[in-house]
Image (cartoon, rainbow, N blue to C red; front, side, top):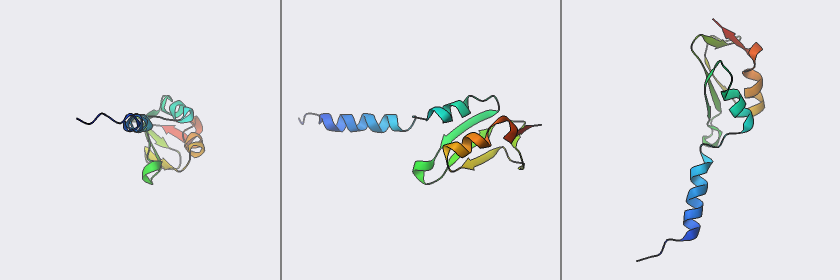
Length: 86
């Protein structure tokens, strides 16, 4: 039998931890009381998708879902003044 390659195992662990890792700023956004979900899809060529909890919308928008190209824009776009309740 072939013995497992320790380098493959190491690479697999890196891949497994890569997905759920989120920056501290995105974790802070996720903790806001009006945030339902934060999905960082930038590695797939998309953006940071933020979903608000029911009853909240983004200011200037009738939507509760919005994409942001950068973490700093996501932070600015999810602050209290950028989100409307009701």
